Length: 251
Image (cartoon, rainbow, N blue to C red; front, side):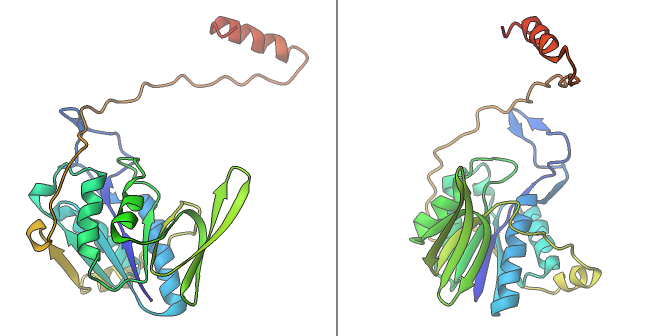
C-alpha cells in the first residue's frame, strides 16, 4: 500500500517563542519536524512494513521545510514532496489544505496520515479540510490503527472509553501522540536519506487559486502562573485549604 504522511517544519517547541511584529518568528530560529508528525511517520512506516508499499512525506512551507522531510526520510520513509512558494507565506489552514489537496489529488495513495494538530498553530482543522477537499472518509484522534484488506480500522478515545471505527480505503486518518513510539533515525538511515528522491513544486505547478480567509493579528506570550502549593494530609488539611482559598478570594 502507498501511504502519504503530512509533515510540518515548526519552531522547536522546546525553545522560547520568538515573536516578530505580533507573529511567530520562523526565520533564523531553530526549526524541527513537528514532534506530533513523528507519530504519523512511524504509523505509516509500520503499515508499509506489514503490507508493503512506500511512504511519501508531503509538506508545504519555505525551502527550509525540506529539513523536516529529511528527518522523516532518515526514519525510513521512501520519498518526499515539498510545495514551496513565497506566495504561500502566511497561508491559513484552509489555504494549506487546498494546496496539499491539489498536490495529492492526482496521486495514487491508499491512506493519508496526519497529526491531530500542529504545535505552532493548534487549529486542528487542516486534516479534516484536506479530507473534505479530496472527498475521502476520515477517522480522527486514532490511538491505534490497522489495515485489513481494503479497509482501515482505528481505536479512538472518547469520554466514555474507546470507539472502534472502520472505513474503506482510500481514507485520511489523524493520529494522536500515544499511537506508537517513533523510531530514532540510525546513522545508516541518515546517510540513506540523502539519496532519496525529493520532489519540489511551486504554486504555479498546481492548478489552484488561494483564498486566505484567516489572518493572525497578534501573538502574545502567556502569563506565567504561580507554582501550586502542596498541602500535607493531616488533621488540619481542610482548614488550611479553606484559608488558602479565602486568601485567593475564591471563597
